[in-house]
Image (cartoon, rainbow, N blue to C red; front, side):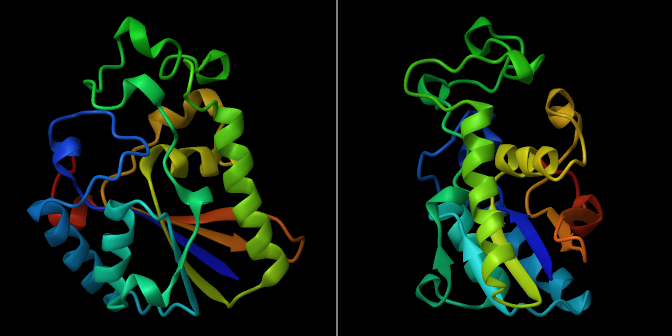
Length: 204
């Protein structure tokens, strides 16, 4: 079984470099264009999906609608695929040096989330639960999953691709795809990273 985890296209909040976390933002015109080009790229790669899942946040859901040509009522929405809850950081500038972010970027293993926000451990636990359900239920040989940037980085950590404190060193552009393969030992491993720089230029 192969699982293709795709990040959403650009939003106005991405363009303005704001935290958006679980805020229900939507694609902007560039994001729609990115998703349309990603659809062509997926087609050219010959990828066909037996089952489709997505975060219910609109920017992810709309991306998957465009890429697959399906209406969201035709695939499964799962809250476990939502972006990390950044709490009071949402709608503030995405500044890695700001005191308010604490160790979110420089030392994720020591990050203490503010009240109402989510820890990396909590994020990883819900993402792992989703992946474990895929492993158990085997909904098909090729699965598409609509997701978010920070959540995808934590999935890389969960799969043993990189340690938590290095997740921000991994670039994940809009509509980028992580391919994970379930091996004979029943473990998911990262087997390919489809970057988007050569699809439609520099991502924000």
